Length: 157
Image: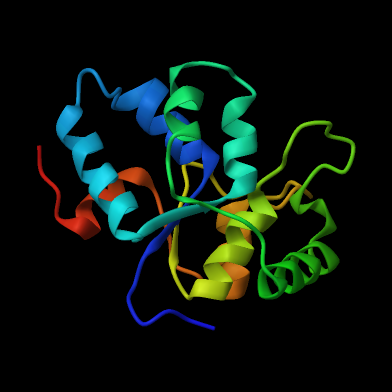
């Protein structure tokens, strides 16, 4: 069931790209103020599995993430989508992995909400492992990089 207002489902890779690689909070506070506003308005969300991936590092990003309200638990509709995604794309996650693997859950949440995805992943190309951009193409979900997201929001700094 799609929501009446548009929003974004953000992947772990986008948070890592934002916080650790390109736009750290201490250097780019305005970006993070705007992200906080989107989180507080409910326009930016992520599945609980993203939080699980972020918590692995036990760093300041994980500490920040634990305090946020954007992480959503699975509901029946999302579970159905995850099952469909894994059934169609069994290589969209690593079943041998002992840590969380959020990719199918990010796509399932976006499908259930009718929202766009923000990720820093690149398509899988010829690899058998399908990544978020590949899944988004298949399910016709708009998929944005962090920079494309900034442009869509018309954010300038």
